[in-house]
Length: 65
Image (cartoon, rainbow, N blue to C red; front, side, top):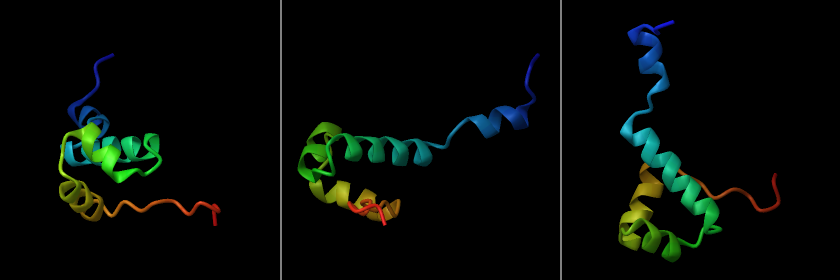
């Protein structure tokens, strides 16, 4: 059965949402090593920090509280 346009739009993430998700996944995989993350993403460390701030991404509390 074909989905209507509204259902399709709900399934498709915006570019910003996709970028934020990808950035967070790489941060997790690198254990929040910002230098390594910036190298893997091929962006400057300053740009990475800017993106983290822009998307309000926060490092999880290591104690899980």
